[in-house]
Length: 450
Image (tube, rainbow, N blue to C red; front, side, top):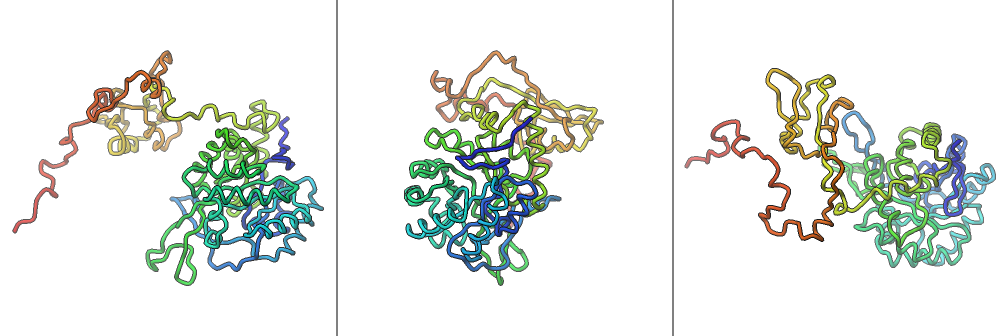
């Protein structure tokens, strides 16, 4: 039977599901409620010199019938007195001694770091998370992502913290940087025990087109906020992979970004995360989602024969290569199941206008057909098709050949000139440009008469 217990850089928790530092971890009341529901750990809403917040604070991206696909906030760190937070950390640890309580911290001078580290350790925190990611408000004061974007400064602060800390230190990274492995390596050089990523992405989620103000609106004005939610998961997965594959990193990783069910969590773990942190999904659906997450993860592990998280952590990393090392001889083409096709012809429109003109209409039928010699196996038709398994990608090569761009380059078999016959595009069938015209002489070609 699956054992969900984790030891993350020396921090134990009954399962790998932690609440991320954010509004759901603003108080001992919320964290006790979350632990009671089944969460394994919580990263306390960032502590520092208490702030004054504004209203409103949140904005969202709704897409078609889905609400909060993306979420944005301009809320800053805790506005509650440090003494209240420390007292509540102590109360939570007394009630839940085996759950992970991590104190997220953000201060400025070295002396303040030393003092607040000692304070949260005395309160019973199991670990410390350094907030080097907040992309709004705090970075304007020289903290948050302002630190996360400067590896040398980040390293120095990690060293300050490690001078006094006796519990594991997690460095939370900002995605608002070109190469996340640079601050990750700096954190490791500074002595961090682990990483967590990603923090939110600097963003504007939309604009009120009647009042001419971006959201969220504060007395007719706005500012950039931090973007999170399901929409950022692909970015977070890629950055998690980048850190997990980097030989200069090699410390435990806590994955964050758009996680709202057990499948999302498994994806992060397969790319190297040892724990996952959740925020937006709890703000949307409440603490109760943990029941499905724990049961789903345990069921997945039982089905696959994994006894612990470590049995499958990072298992997908070896399958993520650089583009130049992919097999260029692998070939798939689309196939339409005529019995499942509902005749919407969305695949035809998408391929005709947005891809490679490999789907044609059949006279007298609503069911399109594939022109195999034109199909490059791009997947677009199968992605837009609204019917599950109606369009499948079928393998056409026999699996006997393997040739990468890297190998072609080594052999001198790559295009080097603008019209080089070694390029792949010469082998695609492309319609004559005039076939695109619906009228012999397009109206926009008629120039104004004097």
